[in-house]
Length: 111
Image 1 (cartoon, rainbow, N blue to C red):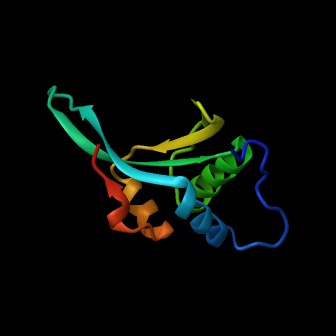
Image 2: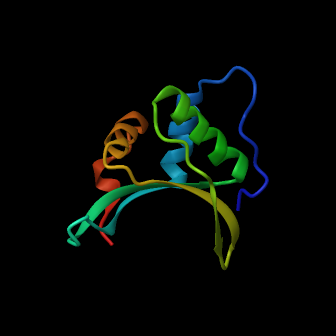
């Protein structure tokens, strides 16, 4: 895993780095949630995996430049090792992020 990888420093095009990184290290899918009325519906979500430093800086870029709500990276443990993940669950934020990251609509998977 990319446990110790750091976010690049210096003169870089941040959005291009983030696009390239998210192309291989993110998932757009759906999750089940309950409405206030108790109905169960599916909503989109975006998950970005990586080292704590990288997902933190990606989230900070989104919060500062796109206006998303800051997220707290969560530790994700698997048999292969530990990594960090940030979850975007907002119905308003997902379409904006998907269009900015140029993620294909075909990448949206149903679970």
